[in-house]
Amino acid sequence: MRSQKVGKIKEHLWYLGRKEAGVYILEGREGAIMINGGMSFILPDVLQQMLTLGISAENIRKILILHSHFDHVGIVPYFTRNYPGIEVYASAPAWKILAMPKAIEIINNFSRLSAKQVGVEGIFNSYDIDWRDDISGITLSEGDTIDMGDVALSILDTPGHSHCSITAYEQENKIMFASDAAGVPYENLCFPSMNTNIAQYLESLEKLTNLPVSCLCADHYGYITGDEASRFVDLTIEEGRKLKAFMEDEYRRYGGDIDAAGKAITEYCYQQMPDYFIPREILEGVFRQMLKYIAKTVYP
Image (tube, rainbow, N blue to C red):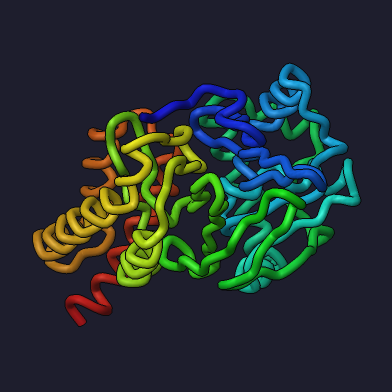
C-alpha cells in the first residue's frame, strides 16, 4: 500500500515533507537520524510538521545523504548551520561531488528552478539553504553500520541512478531506504530512474532483492508498506527493463539523434506523469544522459 501521509509510519519512524520530496526521521535510544535531505523548498513544511508532531530538532544527531543530487540534499544546509553538532553521512563519491564548485552551483540552480516550478521560490529569501563549501562529514561504504543505540542501519552500495548512491536497511523491522536506487512510486506507476548507468542500476536492484522488505521509504511520492513493499524492487527491475527497451527503440527510431530521442521520451513520460516534480528541462537532460549510455554500450 502506498501512502504520502505525514506522520508516524510505525514505532520510531516518521515521514515528513511533501509529495514531491520527503525525509524520514528514525529515532533510537541515542537520538534520531534524518534520512534523505529532500528538496530545499520542503523546509517550511518539515519545520512545521516537526513542531506539530513534537519532533525536536535538537534530538536529530545525524543526517544520512543517500546520494548527492539536488533533490536529496536540499534541507541539509539549514540543519547543519542551525544545529552544528549534527553529523552528516554520505558515500565517498558523494562527498567528492559535494565539494566541487560546479556541483554546488548545479544543486543551487536546480533547487531554485524546482522551487519556482511549485511557486515557492521566495523560500530562499527566508532561509539560508544554499549549498556552500561549509558542509563535510563521515564517509560510508558497503558493510558499514550507523548505530543509534537500539536501532541500526546497514549500508549497501547501490550505484546506477548515480555513482554515489547508497541504500540503508534497518533489519529488525525490514525497512529499506533505497532513495532513487529503487523506483519512484508516482501514483500507481513505478518510474525506474536509471540516470547514469543502466546496467549498474539493474545490478544494484538484484542485490536488493535478497532483503525482505515490510516498508520501502521512497524519497519521492511517499512510502510503501505491506505486500507491495515486498514486491517493489522486483517491480522496479521489470519496469527498468521495459524503459531500457523503449529508449533503445526511440534511439533507433530517431537514427541515433540523442536530442530528438530525448525530447520524444520526455514528452512520453509527461503524458504518463503530467505533474511529475522534476522540471522538463532537467528530466530531458537526464534522458539525454541515459541515451548517451545506450549509444556507447548498446550501439557503439
